[in-house]
Structure formats: structure tokens, C-alpha cells
Length: 123
Image 1 (cartoon, rainbow, N blue to C red):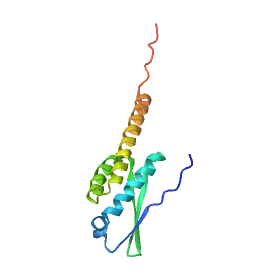
Image 2 (cartoon, rainbow, N blue to C red; image 1 turned 60 degrees about the vertical axis):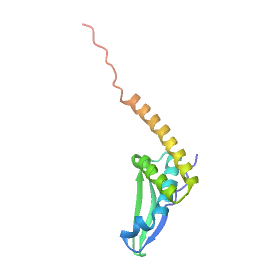
Image 3 (cartoon, rainbow, N blue to C red; image 1 turned 180 degrees about the vertical axis):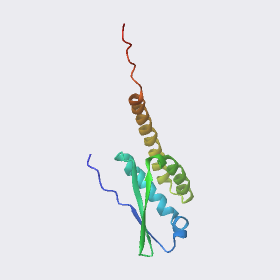
Image 4 (cartoon, rainbow, N blue to C red; image 1 turned 180 degrees about the horizontal axis):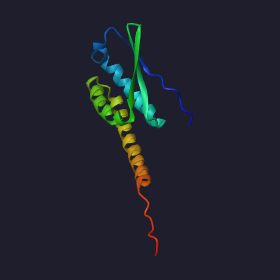
């Protein structure tokens, strides 16, 4: 499957203090879309937003795979707050995909990390 380039959300802010409180919904949607893309293409991290501070400074917000589960849990609450129940359903689906992919990774690591038993030499 050819990987599509993911475009992080662009968020304009007046002050860094306003980022999360004033843009909670936009950031939440960006995180959900980014995690969906990362799971679809098996990425370990993904940039989900580019924040522009008064058009002269910018920073990129990234989420790592290790944080997907906690982020989805936090964002389902935000989507419920905004009554975006379709997004809640998507989050639930993503949580299930994440559990399945994590279980597969754990099985693979377990097989790889299993030490080999060495045969004793006969005297």
C-alpha cells in the first residue's frame, strides 16, 4: 500500500499560553487523525500539528506510538464534551486496532528475545 503524506493541522495562536485551552477541539481532531494515519501505515511517531505564533515563529507537535493509547483516552473525553459521537466511535475503533497491533508486536518481540538454549558438549 502506497503511503499517503499526512498533513499536520495548522493552528494560529496569539500567545503560547492560549494553545491548548483555545484550540482544544482542533488539537484533539488533529491527534485523532494523526493516530489513525500512523496506525494505518505502521508509523512509530507522527507530526499532528504545526503551531504558528503570530506568523513569526512555529513549532511542530509530534506524538509517539507509546503515547497513542493515553492520547486516545484523553481525546475521547474531549469529543464527548463537544458531542462529537462519530469521533468517539472512531477513537474506540483506533483503540482496538492499537491493542491488536501492540499484541502482535509483543508476540514478535517475545519470539525474538527468547534466548537460545545451547546444547552441552559431551566429554
